[in-house]
Image (cartoon, rainbow, N blue to C red; front, side, top):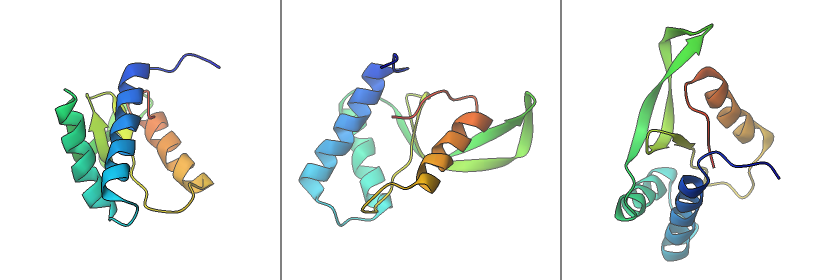
Length: 108
């Protein structure tokens, strides 16, 4: 398996999500999970922005249009929250699109 970019940050973010899910259960809205995970990440020493507007680039040039991502951790890691039983291809494509059109390089 290849090296994971920002492995420690990814591990901490996933750990925060697991901790929140253990404590809060499976039935909350995405917005509530976002708020809880943000608090958990701050407690762990990381900055996390919720509902952050993300610039889109085409051929190196910034467009006026933007995407809004659920969370950006340490100004490096994109996090999208889903409250669904299974992650499907459209969810994966959403994150891959964010990575393709932005300056960011990683999502856990």
